Image (cartoon, rainbow, N blue to C red; front, side, top):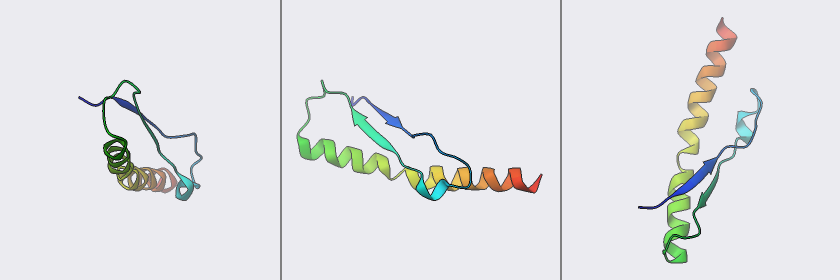
Length: 64
């Protein structure tokens, strides 16, 4: 099992193009550096769907 954290730094609506994601794996993970980098890269692929959902939510708020 791989454990870590995904952090999305504070952002403001209207600035979702600048949205970033930080992925950190726990240090006690006994994985090769290349494997760790691949896991981090794979997790960062979730940023696009998160951004799309937030954009959709932002639009719903504007439409109210």
